[in-house]
Length: 292
Image (cartoon, rainbow, N blue to C red; front, top):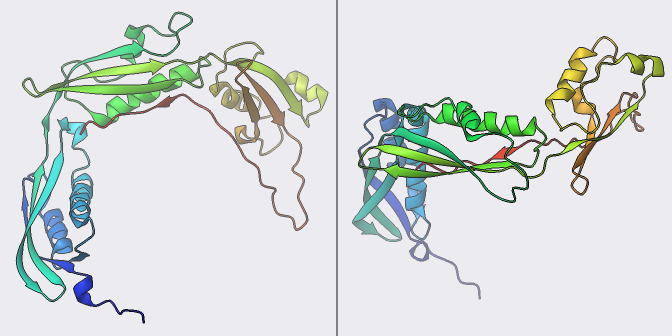
């Protein structure tokens, strides 16, 4: 006979009281909303309910103070502790104390670069040139958005020189005494790709002869040039022609990218709906390790 599970088999936790400490930069309205959302909330006692509480606090902190890392604050942490106040059948009442450490302001001591992976030729960029792409000066307060923008600029610079498989990662060293951080940016350039076969479909040969081409077979791949091609030839191309229609095929063995510009009108399947197509894009990638 199947056994009916009672509430005693499934104990629950209900939060009766919440004390929030250390969230000095959170607006009072956000603090109240956070406390109200936790108070009287029920969890299964066997669930990882403390983790859920801490995640809620982290989201509230991120929403209530989104510029924390743009103001140099690094080292955020949150911890929650609880103690039972009373028990009922299948129910544990608890009081909850949440301790928030909002971190402290850190200045950038230095940003350095290291080339990793197989390096068969001199680096495409000197360290000094890469440093200029990150708009955070040594001695400045760390600013997340500026730093990320710099990493994007480095990735874009590599992709425009044909290094479409390059990766940019970093490691952070925090000096709690001087309240500074040192950042080491690690770059794996990968292989430099060049333009391979370039096919043009669906254009009159006379029109094709008038097109302005910055893309040259054998030159380093630069994906930005595809946008340039459509911009410079807009008056000669069919209405609606777009860079999104370009098919490109990277060939790792040859280290080339073959291109097909297809200007033929789409062939509609029965029913008139547009056929499914898969567009592939490539760019250099960066991975940013957490500063927390």
